[in-house]
Length: 72
Image (cartoon, rainbow, N blue to C red; front, side):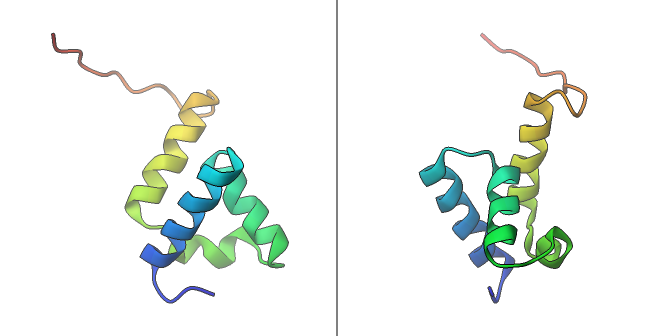
């Protein structure tokens, strides 16, 4: 197990990049491979990783889109 959320996030980001899976899919896969429940790793999800997971859900239309400003 990881000692800090930063270590966990870095590991998940590396796995997601290597596997070409979304962050949430990568976390679920990590949990399955290590016989963990997602609630067991929830305390290791830091703000940057949470934002990336939230973005995954927005892309899947599971959360409402957030309006963005475009500057030229």
